[in-house]
Length: 138
Image (cartoon, rainbow, N blue to C red):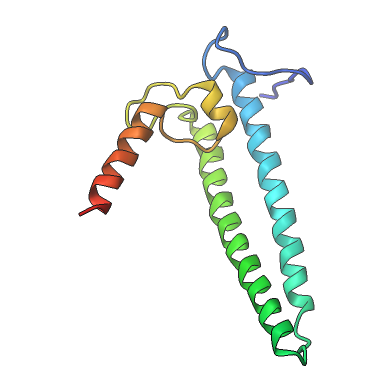
C-alpha cells in the first residue's frame, strides 16, 4: 500500500497514533537520515583512502593521525546510528514503531521528531538512565 503525504504534513496528537500517514512520515524521515549518514560515511572513507603520503614534519604527521582517528570514531558512531535506524525501520515494518519497548505505551511525537530511533518513552528512558547511573556508581 502506497501512502501519499502532503509536502507540509507533520504528525499531530489530533490523529490516530501511528496511522499510515504518520508511519510513512517517520519511515521517510529515517530513510533520509540513513542516506545522509551513508553519504557522509562514503566521503570519510574516500578521504581516508586518499591519505598515505607521509608528511616529513613530525607535527604535521601527528596532526594528520589525530584527524584520521577522529574521522574513524565519527564513522564508527555513524555505523552504530545506521544500525539503530535499520532497527527502527524494522519496527515500522512489524508495526511496533513508536511504542515504548518497556511499557508498550506510545512514545510522544515530540520525542520521535527529535529522536526518531527512540525505543523508550521519556519516563522509561529516565528510569533506565537512573538505573545505569546507580550501577555505574557502585
